[in-house]
Image (spheres, rainbow, N blue to C red):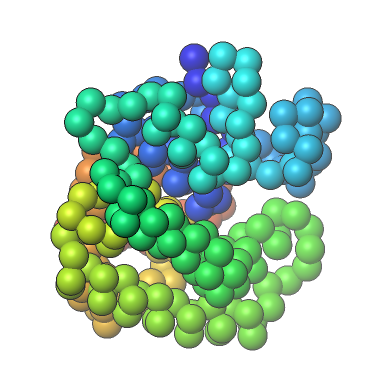
Length: 223
């Protein structure tokens, strides 16, 4: 049995959840409130961060390391989420880093971090200037997603890849808070509709955080 220690609106946890589902793997989900600094969890990952995947007693940390482990340990017949050739794999990894690092710093941290995690961790009130910056930065990233989606079948090339999963994980967290101006970015919206409609995405659409319900369109496949 695979066990994934995660948080609901953690994009890195969501990326691994999507990867597991796209590969047809079941995992027990264990919510880990990382700010509690539980000793048993720190023994799994001294960095104290999610996601952490436990497979047959072996603990694996960091979302991309976990996803690439799943690619190697559980190969899917005839398909890969990394790409079939070196050029595609390089592009997939570039875009994963783009969303996990650049989008994460410029958008997710400023919106999800300020609006949700700051409160959960008892770090004071949201910074309105950070929220404004996050919303402004989001427009640039939505335009880039649209640019890629217009020119390729999926973000990194012909097939769905970890690049799409990383992008969707971050975008879905922001969308849960109702901060995505979809009407201004039809190409990005069309891409998101496609990935949102996949069976692997449905468990994310069922996520509900107590005291913070998502907007009505969040779980709507035809929004």
